[in-house]
Length: 185
Image (cartoon, rainbow, N blue to C red; front, side, top):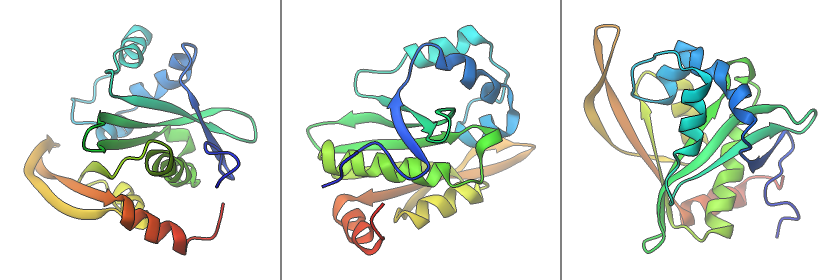
């Protein structure tokens, strides 16, 4: 059993605090971040928009701050969306701020979220969705054991082209087999 369920070697998961909206604001003014994170049009958002997003989480949604251990800087968010407690299923998401990408924070944060989901919340299945053009995210999900399950064809239109929305899933026994193959954190 892990001594610290929410801490890895690089980052820790924490509650989102009201003041985090200020740190998240620049991400919502970055078109590349927005195009990777969601299907909505990439439009810059102001601070009140970001505060509304953070305050508007549903009862069965959990969003966590991803904080860098070295200085406690907010580097991203991970979440569980639409948790169905009866069936033990949920969506998972990760968003790392543009200035912090490519440093392993997203991988570790998502790995911590998986451990929380499967070991603490007793979930059985997690689903992620990702646009077919987001190769880095696809590689991240595959590396953590998510399997391709299907696609919503031509789901999003970007720059005059249509792209599929890929659906990937990870079952608790699959995660456990993969986690057992990994060295302990």
